[in-house]
Length: 421
Ligand SMILES: [Mn+2]
Image (cartoon, rainbow, N blue to C red):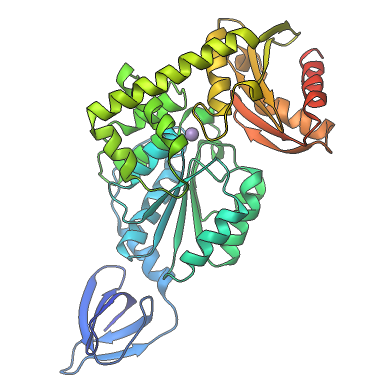
């Protein structure tokens, strides 16, 4: 006698079934129809196969699979237990043939992470425009996903902030499991919504943001015995992380992915990016385009950046709206990063790109080591300008604020006052 969950149905009477009991998969045929996901008791001992529906034992089967899985052990200071739990869930989801949707941030880090997961995880991979999982995204995904058996939504490099809370709450209410692989700070109320979380912010490691999502995906892959082919280095290059030694080639690929992601449609999959990385000629051509755009941006920035001394750091500000073009590379965040690279030196430095409705921060290590953090400035502004700030979040070195239109200048003055306090 075997108690298990039906994970595959084929044929049209007698139906061909595949049953998972947590240890083994068992094939059998039966004239009666059962839906995928049904919990049943199977008796193959007699001449005729007997099948009986039983109360839902999905979770029991799932935890058996997860407990029996032997992972490759790796000790990491940013959360071995969390990475293990995620690895086990990814494995059981695959084993149980659940519908898996992976939404990844459309930048070098998010794309690299998704490319790594795509090496072992069968699922639908879709680009997410920003590091925010919005209510609109949730409604669209929910419609598709809730028709599936035990759907699993995986958010890579996106979805952790307060601005994604409403959307992930909706998904949970729709009965959809949401799992997070990210290195953006997690909004406290979102923690109980995710079924599993791989996020260094959930541990007490130093500088949690410096372990990009793609890097975490590579560790998960390693635990499961899968090669990540160095994609994690592209993730680190894209997010300017120094946890791995990077080559020029990694940096070029990261730039190309960032460039390509700016122009690809929302919801687009992974083929575009993997083809791009595999085609050296195309890669080089796109790289030229991206570099030309960056040079142009640098030139423009040099003419408009304003330097000013404050008590806490040397501050550089510029108006983003005079440079950024909608849906064009470089994006506002990237432009602020370029500005940062121009002025970064061995002094506490803060760069602020501001424009209609947004203020973007980049801060160097020297400033962070002195105890200043972009996330901390945002916290201060959020509490002192409650009525003008719509949203905000990020890391110590990179963060952004959304300001109500017309109040950008007031916010900027408040930031300067804070830096002088
Ligand atoms: Mn990232």
